[in-house]
Image (cartoon, rainbow, N blue to C red):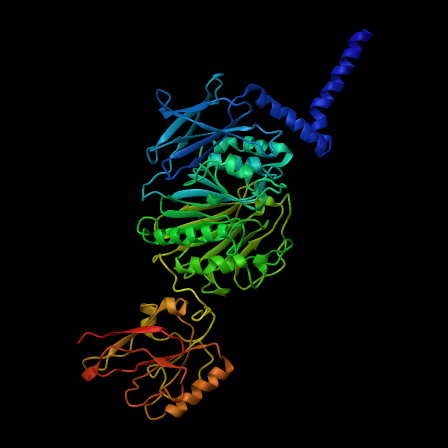
Length: 601
């Protein structure tokens, strides 16, 4: 009897050790326990950590997996279990910080798949015959009538509380691709590579079923004396248009998916003072140039990089909250010149969204035909590592959240060539925290880069127009629209027809002013032809009060000139009018602020 009690006591102690101890013991013991669980995979050599990515085009799928022992492998795949082809893999061995990792990584490419097609596949270890489960995936479609749906996240690791909720979100919503913008696992190489292995096992439920596209962050850079930077990242993942293992000179890529051209950049090496940084910058410029030549097919340009270009001041002080940022200085003109629609980043553990923005100036407080890129930080999956509370509210900030109880992910839906929808959700509850529509009917360059013509949407446009008021008086402090024509045709200023042949039409150039009509305008009246001095006095008085204002003076100045009294103002009407003369309808202090075309006879 006593022997039975002793046996029961031993069993009880053993049960406590197995089931309760892993929960209650400190982190060091957790590591030992996790490594013991990892050995379960390593002892059998079953293919594990299976994840998909896109190849050189969206209908090529890459399959990557790991094994504990060096054994050749292949992928059986087809549209059904009865129609199977196979793809042989290539293999590399992890040799740096990999003592506790499944060291052998395999890669196979499934080429020329049917866009929108449904495929099943299974990973097989050739010699042992060990197999993975049978998985399935859908190839991204190419139907312009269907929306494209993506999940966007960053700063996601093993300590993220809602990691499994995110896994179920991906499985239950019809996403085509998941984008992870840097800081993967925290960190892939830690614990001899076991952290990276464990993270990839936990997300295999979705990475084995749809492309998992990654961007390197600062936590992918390995700090090893004499070691290789980005070593685990370069070997564990395979991204488009790069050799495998990826080289440090190829940690950037672009890919067309549906209506969008996606670009992933490595902000860790984007330094204009280095040969590697210049190589990436040259590639980026050429890629944007080519993307703009094909905007008929991929009108949206979406760029992703781990580090932000704009951010608030917060707990984690960063260069992006300074007046000068090397990354911003490197990229902002390119994004503006080539019409990048939106830039997603992470790094700061919070969520922030800007208004359309260039060189610190907000162009508009909406997203209808935006005239500058929009900047989004989606790093709040990193709250368990640091909650980056905002400590400033800059003028360009449209929305921000740093609620540590809500780990957030983003859902990007590109409906068609003109409509993009972005929403942000709490992973635990799927609560919608933020959303916006971007409507863009004119994709392309936002204009020539540079500070000379930058005008904020809040800057008054002072227009002196005889059509509005009849008496000369100081400008009214009340903003008014320019003319009834502007309400019907935003962006145009059309002089009255005088019943004679000839005449010109003056048209505002949206890109030159970098503001979106209807324009805020302070209007004064009737600068008659024989009173240039009084016109000058009114203009100078207003300029002394507000020197940064844009000023346009509209009138038929055939019989007088303002050039001597207002030397900084210019006339840009050049088309011939009555008797081949030039009608100087408009003076302005912004070069090429409008253009002129002759009215039909």
